[in-house]
Structures are given as C-alpha cells and as structure tokens.
Length: 604
View (cartoon, rainbow, N blue to C red):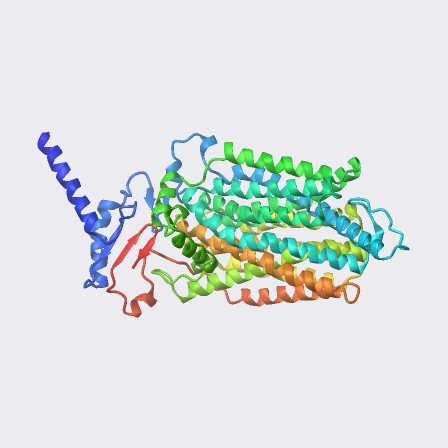
C-alpha cells in the first residue's frame, strides 16, 4: 500500500514537471490534442484517435455521450450545454428561461409604462422653459400655464417640437455612448462571473435614472430639465436596457438547445413588447385616474427594485462555477488592480478607450475552425441586426413626438397607439413565430442536437420580418390620418419576429463558450446604434418639422431597404467549428504550427 502511494506521488510529480515545462495550459476537459512542429496532420489525427477511447465516456452508458462541441447529451433527449453541472439540484435551484421571464416582464412593463409619460414630461418642462424665456424678452407676452404631462396645446408648435427632439437626442447620446463602452464589458464579465450579477448592475442603473427623473419632476423650480441628463448617464453606466436584453439572451442561451433559441428569444422579445404594449395604456389610465404624472414613475421605481431583489435572491445562476472558472482561465482580461504605478494606470486607461471596439473581433474570427463564409455570415448578420435595431431606436421617440404634433393626440391616445402596435408585435412573437417554427421545422427531433449555423428557415423568417417593417414605414411616410397610421404600425409590428431570429442565428454560428462574447459585441453595436440612429433621425425631424415632417419616415424606410438587401448575402449552414482546423489555415501552410486545442478554442 505504501509503495502504491509512493508510485502515485511520483506520477503526480511527473505530471507537474510536464506542466511546468509546457508552453501551454491544459484545458479543464481531458480531450487535448498536441501537435509537434514537425508533425503532419495525419499524425495529429492518430494521436487524437489513440487518446479518445481513454478520454471520452463510454457510449454504452445508457445513451449519454459527449458531442463534438462538448455538449453533454442523451440520445432521444437533447441537452443544453452545461446541464450536467446542475444534475442533482432541486428544481428551484436549476437555471431555466422561465425563471427570468416573469421578472423580465416586470422590468419591460415599467420601461413601457414610462415611455410616453417620460417624453411628455420632457415636453412639458422644455415648453415651460421656452415660454418663460420668451416672456422675459417680451413683457407683453401672456404665458399660458403649463400642466405637467397635460394636453398643453400651446406646446404643439414647431419650435418646441424641435427643442424636444434635440433634447431626447442629447439624452440618447449621454446613455448610448456610455452603454457602448459598458455593454460589451458586462457581456464578457458575465462569462466569467455569472449572468445575474452583471444584470443586477444594469437594473441598478435604471433605478438611479428613475430617481433622478422623479426628483426633477417633483421640484421643477429647483432643478432644470437638464438634470434629467444625469439620470441618463446613470442608465448608460449600467448598460441601459440593451445590456439587460443581451444578458437575458445569454442566460437563455446557457440553458437552451441551439435549434430552439429563436423561439426562446422570441419569448423574451415578446415580454419586451408585451411590456411596451400593456405598460403605456396602463400608465395612461393611472395618470388619468390619479391626475399625477409622477405616480407612474413611483410605480416604475418599485418594479425595478422588485426585479433587482428577485434577481439577487431567487433566480438561479445559469453558469456553473466550473464554467465560470474555465472562462476566467481562458480570458486575457487584465484587472485594474494589477496596475500598480501611475504610468501603468495611464497606459491602461489609454488602451481601454482605444480598444473600445476590440470586442467586435469576435464577429470576424480568424482562428482555427473559421473560414471566409463564417466571417461573412457573422458580419452580415451583425450589420442587419444593428440596422434593424437602430431604426427601431431611432424612430421610437420620433414616432411619439410626431403623432402628438400631427394628430393632436394626448397621453391616453398616444399610449393607446403604442399599445395597439406592440400588442400586434407580441402576437407575432408569441403566436405566429412559434407556430411558423413548428410547422416549418416539425416536432422536436429526438436525434442529437448539433450546432450547424442558421438554416434556410431562419433566413426566410428574417427576410419576411424586414419586408413587413419596410412596408410599415413606407405607410408612415404616406398616410395622413390617425387610423391609417395605426394600421401601418400594426403591419410594421410583424417585423418584430426578425430580431430574435437574428440574435439566435448569431449564436448558432459560434461555439457555446463564445455566446457571451457575441452577445456582448452585439450589445456594443446596439449601444452604438442607439447613439448614431437617434442622432441622425432626431436631427432630420428637428430640421424638417413644419415643412415636410414625414421626411424622417422616408429615411427610415430607406434604411430598412438596405437591411433587406444585406439579408440576401447571408448563407445557411455555416458554423465556426473550433474542433477542426479550417481549410484556409491548412492551405496557408500553417499545418505544422504548434496547436493546442482545448474546450475554449485553439491557441497558437
């Protein structure tokens, strides 16, 4: 027995010596492939084949096996990546998309509920400042009283409309620029430290934003409307709702098989637009019943706080400690605490800002297993998704400002329009998309689930969605009555099924351990679109209101036309397979490089 212990100690010591002399770090999984500089591709395959019976589970263990992508699966019952890490846990401590959906809906309900009142609050405050300044320069001018969030027909003039459009532009710049920096960081950090902790940062930013708005609205004579910009700064530091959506999608991707992600993402988009659909009409009636615009902001503040508490104390984390530690080991992230001197901190800060767009490199991968088709697909999918999102963000405030100016609607009528349009969008996401997916794909397959990129069905759904969006915005530019405008909004709402399909298609192109990076990169693009698109479209509206006011909708429709054209350059069944070297890398004469292939990718 003593000899066995000595032998075991010698073996451990020998392995440690090998590790200390190896230029590479072993992966947590035992399925490693090492190729010497002089080895050819065939010898690598032989080594790999000789090791595999010792490293892979026996396939006679009741049907459980490990797929080529490292996903633990059972024949006849497809499994999501990492599900084995949660085996043995009670149901209330296992991650599931349905854990996050109820609080996420509460969050979107508060977001939708404050959408119209917030713009009307800004409109009232700016209108009051405009007429106050005008009365100072013209003593004969009689200023009519401004009711906070009321009808205020005197505010429906091009001058005030232009000022409101520009102020919403400044708000979007304040939150969007910060979100562009923060969102990808939160996405990457969520791979290493868990989804729900990073999501908590986002919700905290929303809470601080609501507090600032309440204070400004409560004491308008003490705090200028410009203080609302501070609230948007807090929101941007939390990543805004863009980061919340991206992290929610990452959570869903952690516990969903790839071919069902478009439907699951549709649930989250359904929650978003359901909140935007129900929230405004509820807010309209609450404001009408209480006679106080601030009441809806108090309710939103309570909803955000409830979401934060539920997230911290109830929702199970979707990433196990094992997967978090693996992500930390593979990460090249340098912590702030490692920079000791002032010079090091200075260079770190400069690098932080100059490399702000470095996370986008995941959308143009060049490592093993990639090829030009993967890069083109990821680039075009990202471009289409960013364009669609940018148009949605660029038109959100403009549409609300436009319909109140053009049709003379108040908070209740505007809220009803927003609700009708988004109820149609929710119906599309929760009924039409799942039914269409079931009909086109058939019942859930009992075969092993493999990642193989997006398919023709995904592309058909994406193109159809963009086409209906295009029709809707052409209608916005041409109709001149409120009822027809509502019909055009309902037509455009069918395009709501495009966003979840685009997000799901992106995740299907990359290995499971890159999902957070991809969605974090999309968070960066979305945050950038939130800056660029509203800037352009708000300036267009501010410059054309009272002249050809519909110019902005012509530009929005043209943008959708560009996205529709780009969607035809995406090809089906393309996937980044990290377990195999790409043909490009082999043909380039790099087959003899030292390659260490582990669970997280290939290191050269």
